[in-house]
Length: 205
Length: 205
DNA sequence: ACAAAAAATGATCAACGATCAAAAAATATA
DNA sequence: TATATTTTTTGATCGTTGATCATTTTTTGT
Image 1 (tube, rainbow over the protein chains, first blue to last red):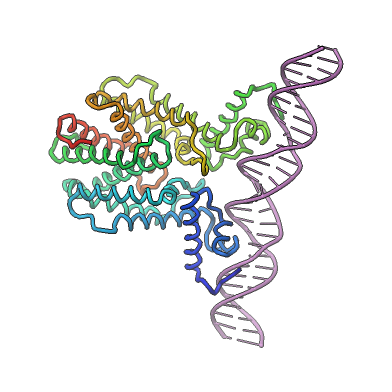
Image 2: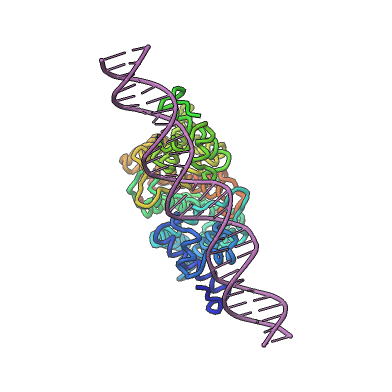
C-alpha cells in the first residue's frame, strides 16, 4: 500500500488531517483513532507515527486547522466600522460556525493535553488572532481605554460566547433554549453596559 | 480480596466513586480507568462492572457528586436579598470552587457521552437546581419579567461564567489573565445593562 | 549499476473496556 | 445444624487501542 512517490511529507500529513477531520465531523473525537486514520488514507499505522508525534499531536493540528477555518468564517466579509453592528455580526458568524461544524468546534475544547504537556505556541497565536477581531470590532466603543483593557474586554466577550455555545451544544444546561437567543440577551446587556459606561454612568472596571 | 461482608452495595459504589474522585483530582479524567479504581479499593475489575453499567456511567455519577458539591459550596451561607451583592457572592463562590477543584470541575465538561447516549435526567435536574440559585439571586432586578425570562437570564449568566472559567482553566485563551478579573468585568457590564434596562433605557430583549 | 538516505511496514508490547462462566460467599429453608 | 438457593466476586478472555522499532521497501545521489 505504500505510495511514497504519490505524496510529499506535507501532502501526506494533510491527507491524514483531512481523514481525521472527516472522522471527527461524523463521530466526534471518540471515533478518532490512529489506526482508522491510517486505514482511511491507505497507509499503515507506523506511517502515522512517522508524521505525527502522537495522537495528541494529530488532534492539536486538527484543532489548529479548525481555528483557521473559524478565523476565515469570521472574516469572510468586512465587519464595517459601526461597533455594535460589527460585534453582532461577529457573534452571528461565530454561532453559524458552531452550528455548521458542531463536532469540530467541540473538539477544540473537548481535547485536553495530557499531564505535563501544554498547548503549542501557535495555538495561543491563533487564539490571539481571533481575539484581535473582537478587539478591533469594539475598539470605537472603548476608544478611551488602553489596548490591554480592550483586549481584556474582548476576552470577556469571547469567553462568554464560548460558554453559551458550549453549554448549549453539550446539552449541559437543561435547556432547549437556543444559543442564539442567549447570545442576543448577553449582547444586549453588555452593549447597554458599554453605552452606560460611555455616558459615565457605570462603575469603573 | 473479595470483602463482600464489609460493604453493602451502596457502600461499595461510594467507595469506588471516592477512589475515582481522588484519581481525577490528581490526574484528571485521563488517569481514570476501571482497573485502577478496582485496584485502589481492593476489588477486581469485574466488581466495578457489577456496580456500574460502564466507565461512562461511573464518570457521570462522579460528575453528579461534583454538581452536588458545587451546589453545597454555593449555598453554604445565605446570599441575602440585595441582588447585586448576591450575584457577586455567587460568582465569587463559583470561582472559588473551580480554583479549589479544578480537575473535578473540568471533568464536568470534558466528558461527553458516547454516540447515541445522552445524559441522565438527574443531571439536568441538578443543573436546574444550580440555575435556580442564580435566578432567585437576580429576581429582584427582574421583578417585571416572567419566570421564563428570569431563568433565561440566569442561563446567560451561568453560561458566561462557565465560559470564562473554562477557557482560563484550559489555557485556551492565550492569557495569564485571571478568571476573577474577567468575571468582574462581565458582571460590571451586565449589571450596568440591567440597571439601564430597569431605568427604561436599554433595548428590549 | 550501485550505494546511501528516506520512508513505509507490521509484528510486538502493555494497557484498556468489557464480558461471563465459574467460584465463593451469604442467605434462606428444612 | 445441614442443605439448597441466591447473590456477589473473580479473573481469564476477547477485541481494540497507542506506541515502538527492526526490517523491508522505495527513492535519491553518485
